[in-house]
Length: 96
Image (cartoon, rainbow, N blue to C red; front, side):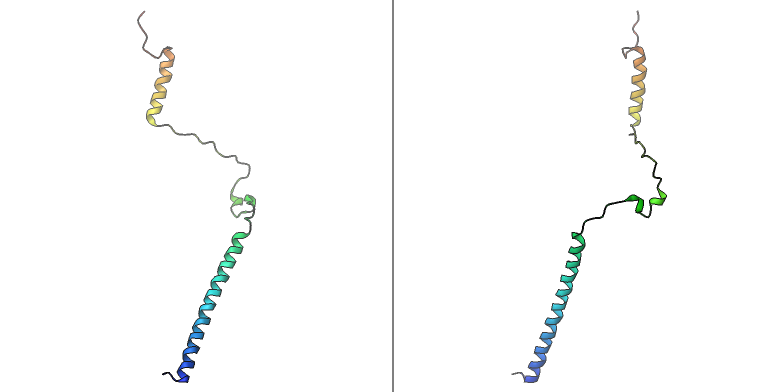
């Protein structure tokens, strides 16, 4: 059987451990509450003029028009089509 002094120390240790676990749980709750608060606020409107890189971008410059590249064999076929179009029918001229 335990002495009253050792029982008191055991209870004190258990109470201290419980308080420590409770503080850790309170820290987790505080962390998640602040995370949810940050997520729940609306995203501010984007204004490119107010960004730090805005001074490097010319405002009046339009975007470039992109053109798709064709494969080399497609260029050869396109050249052949234009040449055959000169003959009219696309075939070799027949003897008259």
